Amino acid sequence: MALRARALYDFRAENPGEVSLRETETLSLCSEQDIEGWLEGVNSRGERGLFPASYVEIVRADAPAPPPPPPPPPSDSRYANLPPGGYEPAPAPPSYQSYSSRYQHSQPSDDDWDDEWDDSSSTAADEAPTPGYYGGGFHDYDSSRYRMSIPGSYSTTTSTAASVSSQANKGSATVSRNLNRFSAFVKSGGEAFVLGEAAGFVRDGDKLCVVQGPHGPEWQENPYPFGCTIDEPTKQTKFKGMKSYISYRLLPSHTGQQVHRRYKHFDWLYARLLEKFPVISVPRIPEKQATGRFEEDFISKRRKGLVWWMDHMCSHPVLSRCDAFQHFLTCSDEKAWKQGKRKCEKDEMVGANFFLTLSTMPGAAILEPQDVEAKLDAFKSFAKRMDEGVLLLNHTAGEFARKQASGFKKEYQKVGMAFKGLGQAFEIDQQAFSGGLNQAMSFTADAYDAIGDMFAEQPRQDLNPIMDLLAVYQGHLANFPDIIHVQRGALTKVRESKKHIEEGKMELQKATEIQERCNIISYATLAEIQHFHRIRVRDFKSQMQHFLQQQITFFQKVTLKLEEALQKYDTA
Image (tube, rainbow, N blue to C red):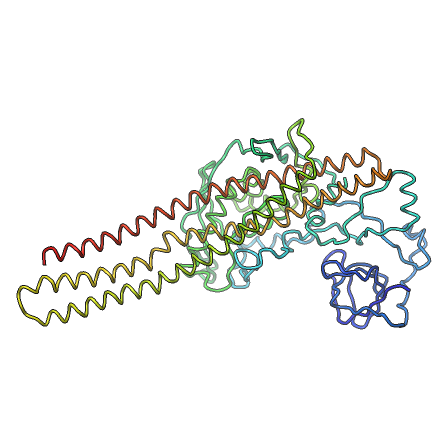
């Protein structure tokens, strides 16, 4: 008897492959086993798809059978060979569509940017808090990173016995699709690429090459490296002062022409980069904030975060040459901005087509899957330990900074007040020879009061920059689980194809093509890991040098203040 379930709540499908439910509705289940909290089944209207397992209860006792789905039109060839139950065990996989053809339907109209090209609003709603930037939850799946998926019904790994037998006899078995259509491997387009469903014309300017470096695969360096500064932000107004916003002045070194950007421009670019580069760790921009956006401390903190973001963008051999990033850095004309924005949003080299832009040097060796797996495991262990270390250091530095700003300052000032109280008692004595001591005691009290202020201000010079850097790397470490998932998904397809070869179910050429496409993803993933390690060494070396130098300077100032107080007693 077919598995059945009853809907406990209404559920509205919001993503491709989901199916809507109505409360009390009876459904037919494809399997009782849920996948990451989702079940697959057919509702009373004959629609097949995924829905949350917690929204239904499985009916185990005898219950009225669900109404059969409406019969399909006789002319529909998909229903020519339906089994007796009336349902297809697995709809035919849809032909691959480029992300751009689907992306256009989900984008806001250009009218949103027409009234003023550097942002349409400065209300609190525009900058509602967004999880997954520098806050918590970095290891949760970020649905905004992979919003697109191949449209149509979900294909499953199940098939009829007759179909499997037929394919085995003909030696034309195909690698199965992932049942979980919400995985990063599927939504990034990695699955479609590995299975050979991606097709598109790649311009020379879109090609991304991975080369063999002394320590493994590396991204080909940008032959024209550059940097970009972000000056102190300024508050601007529009609509005769009715709305205010913060403007950042950018000065790229390769053009020498300044441009002004709002935070929303950074946010727009960040979204485009996430959509385009599924195997690259796009640095995360500082978090949004609904209130207090014009407070000096918040503006300063956001600018420092954007400076780090810009540094990592300019340092990346791929991201630095991206058309969207170059448009962001160089366009200063309103009409040209809108045209470039539309062009970026219609980019066809996203999703599965992005992988077509990847290439290796001629004669590059095929990487052994087990070697790639070992390197991924090693990096995963490293990233886990680094993430723990980053969280611990960030917490410790934050606590120490708070102690310096409040506890240390108060304690030193308490000492100063105690010295001052004793000095005031000494002043009651009117003997001439005690005047020098009284003055020295007063100076000592003032010295400790000043040292307390110095402690309160010091975190801005040493600990805060460390925490700013840690925030950047929290974002990078949160990006890599999805990147590694794409790589592991590709390796799984290679293993499946090899199994089919051993069983005589797949042609050697087809399996070889799958392995070659997986090899490209392997090279790109290892190149990204290599780049991460390079900038990590660069950044932490530089920041630790800065931290220690600031500590030395700080304690030299404290020592100087104490030496000045000591000298007062020599002449007392």
